[in-house]
Length: 289
Image 1 (cartoon, helix red, strand yellow):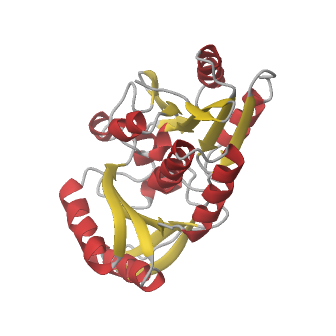
Image 2: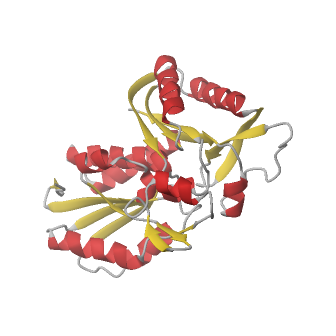
């Protein structure tokens, strides 16, 4: 059962989108509402995570390459109206990176139409559990009674401490989906050169390092994390594309090598998996204090 956060005289709701890759249990535990990105298929449009799950998406990708699109504006406005009916007076809406989706700009336009609600729209400049970790921190801050402005400042600070990276089997889907960003467009396929991709400070994909082969790329990714966060208290999220057993091994490696306060594993949502395909492994780390 979802509730609202009570901060002084305000009733506050925390909203994000399905690209956050938080589990249904996490969303319920922290009273986080979501709007769904959309997936366009030959059979029509489907709402991310509501009408299609990762297994169904990977099966579909064997016969076609679906496309993604923004949440419906009417889904956003409908959620806002529903929250107002619950007694909400203020909404904190943290979105997927504006560098990877038009969701942020669309949400800002919808929010501008609500005169009776104060709506703060924050561009996370990241996605997947990078967004998810920030939203969890926001929820915990609101539960402690911090003001929305204080929470926004902390979210922005933590984003500056965050590194989110992933390694994928092929760049084909990123290219076809137009999400290649600053990742080198030509990678030595014969030599099996794999880029470790990260979300940069502008919220777009960029190559962090390269290595020969998937396993060595994962090792290079881990080395970068262990170097950057040595001696720091951190929160960790491991993400995967239908590769849970490998994700579990990766999680244990991080827990053994860093001062981890909390960690969890999550599959990437269908809307993100379209651009990465099966086999993805990634990690997101940010300061825990």
